[in-house]
Length: 306
Length: 291
Image (cartoon, rainbow over all chains, first blue to last red; front, top):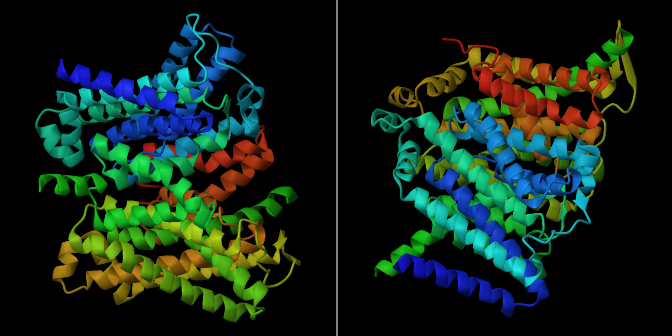
């Protein structure tokens, strides 16, 4: 009962922000919220299940392109298009996960990186279906159940999406499956000895996280009303990894802290160093691993305990 | 046939570059288990070194190349000193230095783009634009220069690992770190040397490929992927595997562009597909490590 009230309060507060902020800041806010949704699900596969992957943004893109292509190229009604895009994410996630999660450590990262790069190649060469290097544009969100979900209302939709993602992941994390994921991360042999099916745990964790990324991507498709290949490339996949590590991997709050910090940093830094804020991200990433491997959230813990 | 032989020289030249990058990975992976994805960025630094020293300062080619390689030894050693050694000394999990090196990758790339700007820069050819014919084989001077230099590096690497005591130390560390340390091998020194050597080899690959693709701050990651694919095809066990993997990858790429009935854009997918297939089907590579 108490936690339901907390979730409701969070939904109201985060939605209220949309009505305080102006048009431009709403756009920034929506993108920040989507980054948080991605960081939460990436934290699940990387921080909690211990699998380094670079395909998270590819699944974000599969969701985004999937919904646009199904709605406007295949002209499906919206409930079918949403289900179709989710189904596409599930099928592709399983197709990547079942063979790839057998790979150990960074070899999995490179296999998923190859998949993500291949996705970009397919987008660039996809002709009229994917719109090639220019991507797809000039489409609009249809009225859903008679509602016009554009502008500030759409920010509320994304707030609900982020909270739903957080709720699902918290629920999974606190279940036996979440503990199985942590056991596999910390010591796969010991986990297997305790009766955990290591391969299945990895496949399910990867699929859940990737499908959540795909759903966030479906929401992203109508933020700018355009999708194009560079958004879903390796650059952002690296940035997502940096966000989770700087914030504190394995902790939901850490993922949120890291994302907010690294997302807002360029706005502060650009008057000083222009477009080179990635340099600062790289330095922060190295510093985090060397000096504070459990991330900024661990600093907060130390402070709170006093 | 003429067409194929022409293509073969070019493919062999690119294959040697991929092989050098695979070798750079290999000298670091063998003793430490660390996959240093920043090798592509090191190659980029080498290519920009070529632009700076050879194009802007007009140094003679041999001297410039030696200076860049010396500088890259330093870059590799410093990278190890700053990011890898503190983590190894602390006993951090093996993934920690790998991820820290991804941060270093971004630092290198952004520093270069900050210093040199986003435009491509020309790196000179050591022997100009001429064309050389050896029997039925024909190609540019640069292709033959790339092949010759790479083969010399591979011969030296083979000699080092197979015939010298220092090379045996590397192998001992690769086989069993703990036992090697107990035998009196200085692990910290082997790790530092492997990173310095990796930096020099990757930098050399950058100088060699520089004239063909121009020095550009985004050239690193594609090279890193191609080099790693070559490594996975050949297997991390042996020096020859890196060269074999590089050559196979380059031929697969060039043959796809030339003969396969797919749009040329899909040729970029060749290393990616090969990487996935080899990782999943044959993760040990084509050549087995010697027991």
